[in-house]
Image 1 (spheres, rainbow, N blue to C red):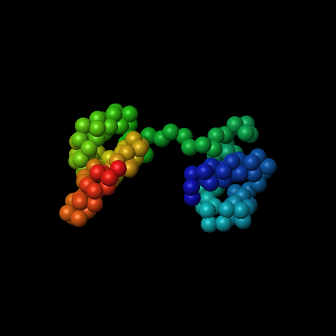
Image 2: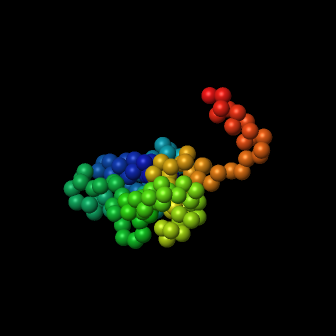
Image 3: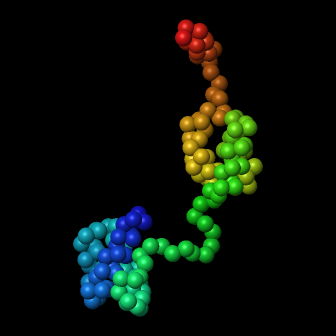
Length: 145
């Protein structure tokens, strides 16, 4: 389920726990409203227990807390700056080459390029080979304008 839906469900769980609902009833009510996107029973039960132990009602946060481990994305300001410099210095650089230069994976390089809003330029990094007739059409169009 999307993160927004999960956070909404956590808020609903907090409200229902404050009303004194049992985890089983909370799960049934979530299933009635959210159908296939509802939290599974175990996660709903876990949230209900955490909120019951949370102290004062209304003080628990339903937002995701920072966790240890690898970040969800490798788009850092330093990588963005390096990528931008590489792209501006060599418009023909490929994603594979950019990933190699940054020491990142292909998908990370793609995320960085997307975050820099180079998506339309990406298509033109490596020029396609045009047939002679296409080159002539392009030349004729440029001369006529």
